[in-house]
Every structure is written in structure tokens, then in C-alpha cells.
Amino acid sequence: MLVIGKICVGCYFFTYTDCQQFLLFLCVNPTFMNLPLAIYISIPLVTFVYTLTNIAYFSSMSPEELLSSNAVAVTFGEKLLGMFSVIMPISVALSTFGGINGYLFTSSRLCFSGAREGHLPSLLAMIHYKYCTPIPALLVCVRTTSASIYTAVTHNLINYVSFINYLSYGVTIAGLLYYRWKKPNLYRPIKVNLLVPVCYLMFWALLLGFSLYSEPVVCGVGLVIMLTGVPVYFLGVHWKEKPKCIYTFIGEFLKGGLT
Image (cartoon, rainbow, N blue to C red; front, side, top):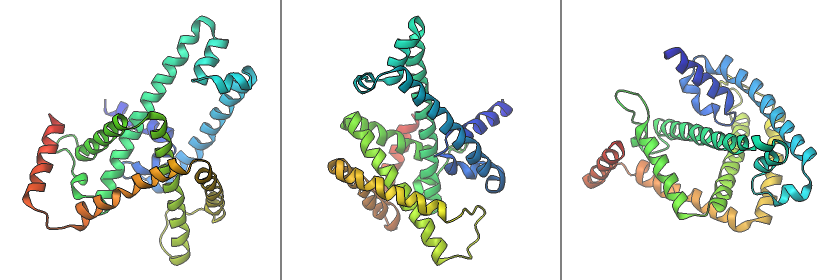
């Protein structure tokens, strides 16, 4: 079972190209072998599969069919697979389940790592005494996700999250360039040519400008959602001497999640 678990973690690490850096602290020798190898294998592989998928769509479906379809993969299956078209919605459901599982796995570890570094409330850095999983971070991710699903339209929620993720990616790359400029001699296990982040930041700024122009309301709401983290930081991290009632509430919150 231990070997199977290691194989699953390894396959997961190579699959989620945008989440693999969140799992570095779980990997052996991550900086000099595993992370570069995961990047070099996963990005070309995913790009190749996505390119072939789009070629298959455009070569078998008209532009009108693509625009009118609510689920392009399902329409593609109904047109070409006949009686076996049921495979497509099942595959989409399995892919969605895998994606949710992956993002739940990584987002909780992201909160856990941030809490360990002092950027989030220390409660999120706690782990289960037996299974060593970040239970508080998992509970926060699950409950906030559930609340978002029940209080927002799914399509708008996807747009909000996409804008937030895209904005955070650009800010991260900008931070990389800032540290390369201000601290050029800082130890870096992995160091890429400056042309890569500069080109990425240029395309990021261009696409972000188009997003702000075409959907300003969606971008504004996404920005407001991001700013809700400011009071959380001041209440959970900056405020050191909290009253006893807050710790009691946290204890009840964890008990409710575990039961």
C-alpha cells in the first residue's frame, strides 16, 4: 500500500502543472530533480494533448456547433461516437472530480504552508496527530467553497476565481523580477533566464487589460473578494492577544468539522 501511495503522489505531481510547487515540501529532492523534471514533462505533454483535442473539435464540428454547444466534448461524442457517446460525459465527470480533488489537496497545503510562514492564522498550520493532514486548512477550504457555491451563480463564480488566480500569477512573477533586481546574489536552487518571466509578464498585462475592459464588473468583484483577506490577516495574524471567546469558537469549529 505504501508503494501504491507513492506512485499516486508521483502521478499527481506530474499531472497538475500549476499546483506542483505547492507540494514541494512533500517531495524528496524537489529543487534539483523532481520539480524541473515535472515541468519539462508535464507542460509539453499537456500542451500536446490540448492541441490535439482542439484540432479534433475544429476538424469535426462547425463554428456554429461549437458556439451553440453547452458541452463541446459531449457534442463531439454524440456526433462521432454514436452509441458510445455516453463515454464522454462520464469522462468529463471523472475529470471534474479529479480536478476538484487536486485543487482541494493543493489549496489546503497552500494555506498550511502560508500559516507556517506566518502569513495566515497559525490555526491553519495545525495537522492531525495521527494522519499528519492539515485538517483546519481542509475545513476552511471546504466550508468557504461550499458557501461560495450556494451564494453565487456558477458561471460568475468561475469568472471571479479565474481573475483572482490570473492576478495572483502576475503579482508572483512581478515579485520574482523584483527580487532578482534587489537581491541578485540570493541563493536560488532553480534559476531561469529573465526573458521567461519578462515575456510572461508582458502577455499577462495585455490579457489583464482586455479582461478589465471587457468585464469590469467581474474583475471588480474578484478584486473585492481578494481584499476580504485583509481583515482576516489583521484579525488572525496581526492581532496577537485575542479574547478567550475566539479560541473557544475555534475549538468548536474544529470539533464540528471532525464530527
